[in-house]
Image (cartoon, rainbow, N blue to C red; front, side, top):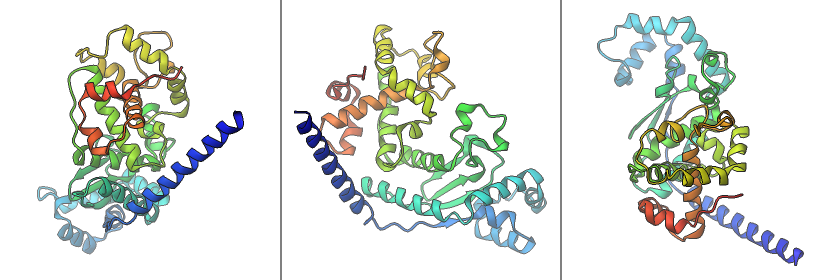
Length: 319
């Protein structure tokens, strides 16, 4: 009986691998042309003549109210030049990032035929972590100085739960998230369960277009904290049920369990062991359970209302 179970498991893994390979082949047939402008390199290496050419070529990056003196001062600013030097040493000509972004765009086009790849600009923005990626349909701006590695010296003053995501790998996650938020529409609501499933759908979308990423990388968890979530999934869910949180509309639940934070707030002594945003992770687990138990398209899943998705998910946390 044990040998039979192993054979069945091996057979299922083989079938799934074959399906994934076939799907990837279909995705790679998507005709995508990615235009990547290494603006950060052009700008910080510009002389007077090149600066004038850049202003003419990309006027939306040079407000009329800003003088050339300001731009020259920015180019020669020691701190910004150090950020440029660091980004240049890590990314070079961005050949690897261009290839990965092209594959990401192929995934998005496969699931949304109306998606057209934007023109991409690499920037140095002086550690503007709130605008590390800006997506405006035809244009995409990426601040490379926000992806120098979590231990990079410029991030010394940032708390760990934030700077842990300032890596090359998270660059792609942030780009994907910004595009998906605009290109795949699904409803949020007022209750805690609706909010959990709204964010759960987003993580599920991310896992669909970035299939080689771990879930902890998509949510932004350190491995140790993610392991805590896995080991305590049943207890987390039990807490939500015992406290009658699922249908609560108390907005104070968002900073406790949804928003980015160093830890979630159960108001227990063990809180600091937890990752933040545990409501997002549980929301993803419910959506994942639905996907595993129902044969629907991605678009159908996203369109489902909260009650239907929750009921048909048959979600049972691991103990």
